[in-house]
Length: 168
Image (tube, rainbow, N blue to C red; front, side):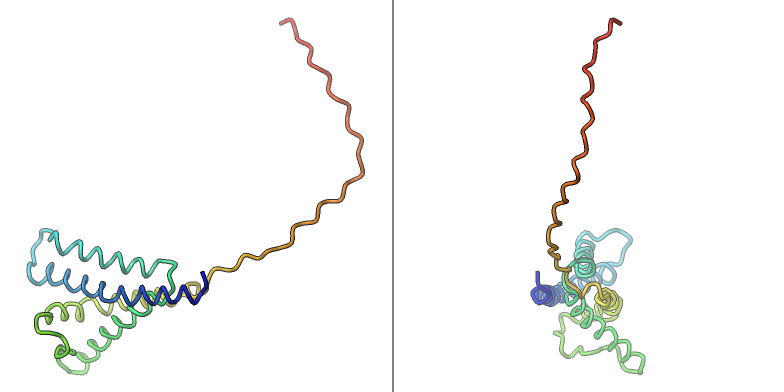
């Protein structure tokens, strides 16, 4: 596969995975830790978490283009960095809440304050390796080796005698 096609597929995978990761992490965090904080396992929130982390793992460890992990990494890293900077500079914790519908404020806050910066850092570090940007090396076609010259005919040894059956 050529590098251009590989990067195009990777960019598409990254654009598709970004909302899936955001929905999985925000829903799982709110259901598990905010609405029903208890010691038992929530059988709806945990598979959603696992699904989001599986998508992250596929983007991080696959042979897809590093654009697949770079695009969501920039989005989540930017959200987490902007939230951290806004809180650090004395602003409130409601970053761009006016752009999010009121029903989703709790989900957005869970994503913004808990998961966006760590997930963004993991995805950005995964796309930083130079070996992921290179395509597979093309197989070099070497000319076939020349047939070996016939060596001087060496005399063949005499054939071995047939085995004589023994009496024992």
